[in-house]
Amino acid sequence: MAYLSAIKTATNTATSAYAGTSEMPGRRFVRIRNLDDSVAMTANGRQLEPGEETKFSLTGVGTETIIVQSKGRALLYEIQEVA
Image (cartoon, rainbow, N blue to C red; front, side, top):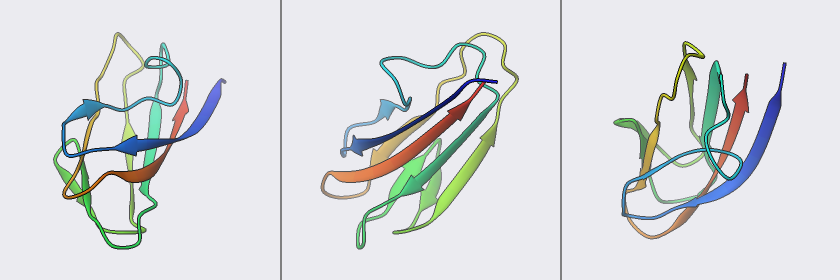
């Protein structure tokens, strides 16, 4: 089992989310937490209020992109990937 965690920046431009330099091959689980104290964000269309987190269970086959976007200014979020 491989595990990777990072703190990244989300802006108001939609972009793919990953903890390393690209999506972890065969990732089966992804957790994203909004670290901002006042600005919401989205992850694959799910709204995350400040401090809130969401989890994604993936198939581990091919690439499954998760798109994140801030609802205002740039903010920090934590992402954890497990393969």
